Structure formats: structure tokens, C-alpha cells
Length: 100
Image (cartoon, rainbow, N blue to C red):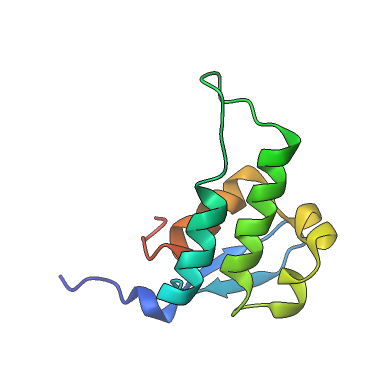
């Protein structure tokens, strides 16, 4: 069985009901993404600070820049349509992993 072509993208349904196709990040985008993602720090209990949530939104914006630049440049709207499951799927697709 052939591997799924991840460059075709992964369709993800966001909390606003809209489905967006997310493709793996390019190396240039990955550099920006990793700087933000590596700055996130969660405690051993898994709790997150407001700063960490801001970093999540920033990393999601980087992942969505090619897919939906208007959304990526609007952090408030992005916060309203992201939940933890969607964020996880988004990050997996952006990193080139099959979220399924």
C-alpha cells in the first residue's frame, strides 16, 4: 500500500464550521514555527499560561499562512475558531504527519 501524499494536504474542520486544507510547512515556515513552538512551556500537570496560549495562536497562524492568510493575520478570530483538538490536527498536518 502506497503512503498517502501528505503534500496534497489534510482537510481540517475548524470551530467556525469551515474546512481548510492544511499542507506541510516549507523549511522557511518551519524555522518560524519552531522558534514559537519551542518557546511554549507546559507544566508537568499540563497546565498552560496565557503566554503559552498566545504562542499556540501564533504557531497556528504560521501553519495557516499559506492556507488562509486573512485568518492567519487575525489572532482574535483565530482564537475563536481553534480548540485543542483542532490545534493538534493543524500542527500534525503542518508538520507533515498524517493526523489520522
